[in-house]
Length: 225
Image (cartoon, rainbow, N blue to C red):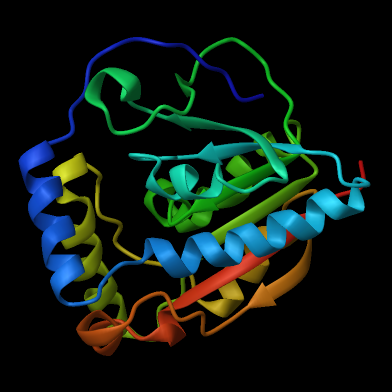
């Protein structure tokens, strides 16, 4: 079960984050807009199935919660909770006013979990363990992650990952999912894949030329237990 705790310090380098975001803005590398829009659409469909009930979302591996900040404006969302490995006060750092909790002993239940570009950092071959753990928290998960397509593609993903995550102190993986390994991970879980969105265009401009849409996918997982 997911466990939370709250403490107050950060390992984020805010100067590097500012510079990285500035470069993204200049070269149209904003990944947040397209991802947020798609998550808003899928989460709204889920809320409608619940007869218009407002839903509670867990942003697993939330980072600076920039995507959650955009999603929280949606009328069908009651609350978004961020969780990550950091001891961190987002309110104190003025990065977000959303609730953030570090993993600890307190158990929670939510309507939906979003996992955005996180599983490959945990480990491609260990992802099923995380998904099975999360199955006790929610019956539905939206996963956004990457597909590699050979050696060159893998190194390109690693380079972009380094650029995007160095300021946050995130370890860069040695490999990523391909279509076969992703399906193998799902088979080891309680989930069934209800929808797979391949070739998801995450970026515009120069960033899309560097890392085009074939490297990005969104998977919607559900279980009945």
